[in-house]
Amino acid sequence: MHNNFSIDDLVNDLTPVKPMNINRGLLLPAIMVVAFATLFVTQLGLRADLAAGIPSMVTLMRGGVLILLGLATAHAVLRMAQPSVGNGSQGWAWAVGAALLFPLSALIITISNISSDMPVNVNNGWYCFKMCLSASAATAIPMILWLRKGAPTSLERAGWLTGLAAGGLGAFAYSFHCPFTSVIDISVWYSGAIGTSAIIGRLVVPHLIRW
Image 1: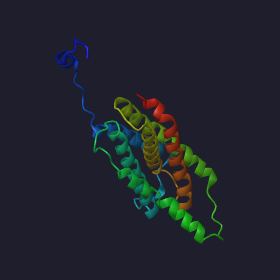
Image 2: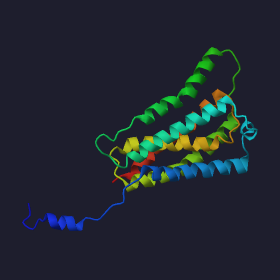
Image 3: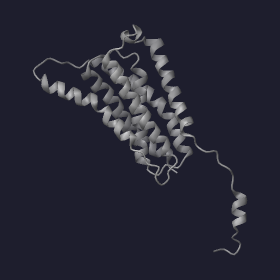
Image 4: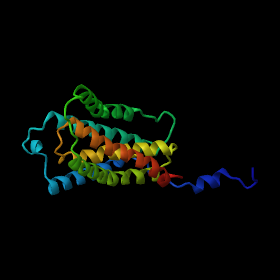
């Protein structure tokens, strides 16, 4: 140890750091979701069943699953900026399990109706895919900035979860306009957009938040 080492000098060099409040961190992604939902509704229109005040069961289930997935994974992402012993949370894993409801249902429906003609709506589907991804990209930005302020220890997991959270929240924002009522279409295009967002998050986010 150097002879000039002094605890007092180290203490004098310390500067206070403002605590990172997770609830405050969730505010910006929430604002992005509201902004994009408003943009989609004003520019493209509100779903007919929502406009009539009688949302279908599929609409309610889809919205519930998407917001659950988005908020649970976003909360996990924000907690990763403050690593500590016992600070783990597996709530996001349950949310991902709930999100598998639609693709599993679509698989069961497809198998049970294997001889039926059940086409996927390709034209509207690709549009849905692109709109969900665009909203997801914007929603990911505040979460990435939050992670850069902290000290996440698992960069790869942070990438996956950021992509999942952004995908779920972005898809939720678009769902206020999306005309799909078919479980098959919802499973293909929404799951595809969320999965793509997760992969992009895994590939891009770790490079942006590395210490």
